Image 1 (cartoon, helix red, strand yellow):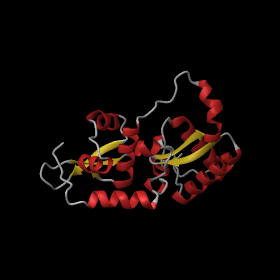
Image 2 (cartoon, rainbow, N blue to C red; image 1 turned 30 degrees about the horizontal axis):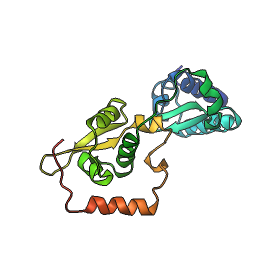
Image 3 (cartoon, rainbow, N blue to C red; image 1 turned 90 degrees about the vertical axis):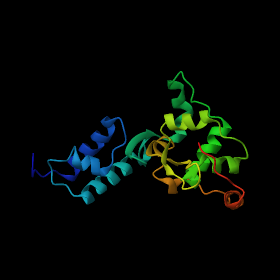
Image 4 (cartoon, one colour; image 1 turned 30 degrees about the vertical axis):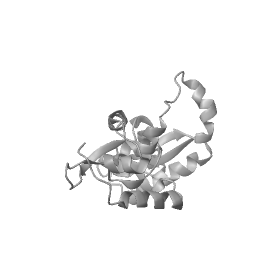
Length: 196
């Protein structure tokens, strides 16, 4: 197959099938380095093929979307009320504390537990951090250079994938009032970091 030429239609079929059967999101680079390894296909052709697939599915019940770790097919959000009947289990409900903690990490990363507590005004339960780490939605990306060297938390590609985000720039903007209040709380010199 090395050096073999394929048509644009064949390329679209191969990429579409690869993403469909992969079971996880695929990047264009991964597709090139695996499925298309024996073919001399440029990244520009791969990008064009992906765009063609996205265009084809634009009026269908599923879409080809880009999330943090690559491209995947997923059902249109508007079909959720009907599709949810396929599963006996209901989507997990997350506590307000967990969602607030995750939001602060997503918008202010890297951030320490002490900084999260300063903004929220309450202690962050170790179960919340443990839950977010186990779900692989957050990870420790370092330690702050202050006494106790508390862990710095940031979101992961799994977080982006779960919430169908291509990147952190896809997060909705925080209202200016909330943003300035968070900035004020985090710049307060009375904030002291405690060891984790």
